[in-house]
Length: 240
Image 1 (cartoon, rainbow, N blue to C red):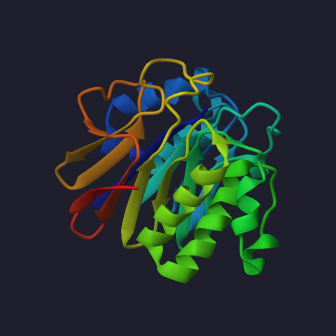
Image 2: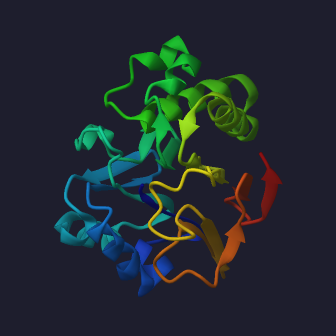
Image 3: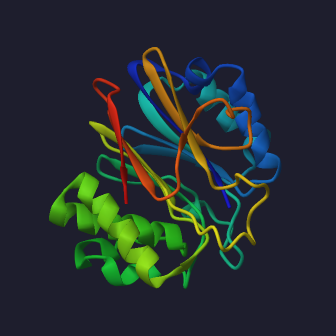
């Protein structure tokens, strides 16, 4: 239901510098994905309830914010979920930042996997925020990569979902998971709606949703996880 764009770089840069003129094409997707936006970087989050293409805050942030990596989320609220700043992605805790594309039904499915230490941190009503805290709970138990893998597999084993596409960034690592239900296309706006694609451009590594001119990028196939070492840009792809 949303659009995702992330980058990690060996230098501090703005989104405009990393993505180039195509950044405006991504922002233009907010004509449909119009229920707010957010950028997460270095444990901080900037959010706005306005559609990205109408947000002066985004125009300023996209050009002036320089960082070695960030997650950018355009939200189209799932049916029945509130349009509220607390429901905007990305979500962050300490140095871990997360965003999700897709719908999980029931919305509270992931709550059963959340440790008590995180339950009091939930502020919104989304399936995605609960997904995030379930993921943090697993990371505490088994580490980052396996924690991400375990959480996705636990949710997909019991939930009705359109997609569990996520991106997770820590100071050392950028992770992207492509996991969507090919039998449930009720939320698709095109044949490649939930696909993820990535590109390496010199000192920059980008990964994003489709629909804005990145068709020549490399595909991250369904049911796969991409793990990027942020200090070297070396990456691996493995099945869930």
